[in-house]
Amino acid sequence: MRTNHLNGWEMDFNFPIEGRTPKPRDEGLTMVLDKGLGLQETTDLLEVGASYLDFLKLSFGTSALYTPELLHKKISLARSYGVDVLPGGTFFEVAYIQGKAELYLERAKALGFSAIEISDGTIELPAAARTKYIKHAVGLGFKVLTEVGKKDQRDSSPISLMREQIQQDVKDGAYKVIIEARESGIGVSIFDDQGNIDFFKMQQLLLAVADEAAIMWEAPLKKQQLAFIKMLGNNVNLGNIAPKDILALECLRVGLRGDTLRIALREQLPANQGKEKGVTSF
Image (tube, rainbow, N blue to C red; front, side, top):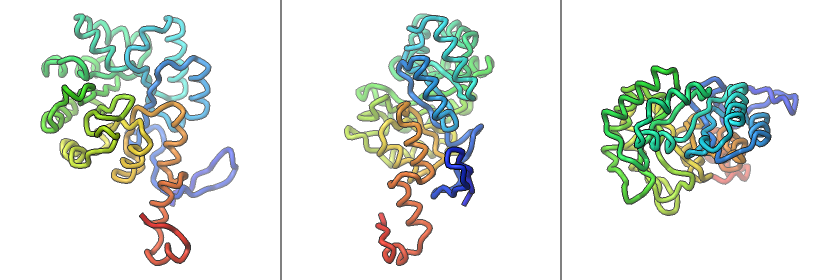
């Protein structure tokens, strides 16, 4: 196992699940959904969790409601902790339907955002326009995250089309492709009305990429986070994480919660040894 030095405990410690990629990283990313944290709340989040947080998404169009001074302070604060900041994809969609997508991207760059989301979760964005704005954003120096899937279940796309979109986005230069789950994680994309993952759909989407790390799975619910970690490992990219859950998720990733500690015990002990020591297997 990898040995980790824990500053607070001043001891060398082996995480039960090894192999967690440290920052800066391109896999095992965690994106937090920020629905309007104040500056002090953001400071608290970063002081506690910046080592485990890669992207802070100012969700929906919330960044349009900040004062310029506060928005600048918040972006600068997050970036000073090594965290990328991006506005939500809905804001891009509004800019697009108003004919201001290029201005929006340029203004986001001037404000200090380091990442951007290109999506069509609510609107219909022609394929040529999607490619155009992905490439334009890449040219501006953004980490471009695209999103696949509709927010309204009535508008859901066939998995085959979602898979094609993932492939095209990666080809166009997207840093990661996000699979839509909204903030609820229920009844959208690959999730049913109870928030359970349709594993067949998930596997079909994975077929679109040569590297699983090209995909970020929105997973606001703990059971979804656990399922992805169990299936794809502790360096799976996860998004739409609530600010209050940042440490809880990292504990899941490294086996410091009972759910994933059980996985570690099952994998590291012979089958009969677990029974002798009272370890419950899955």
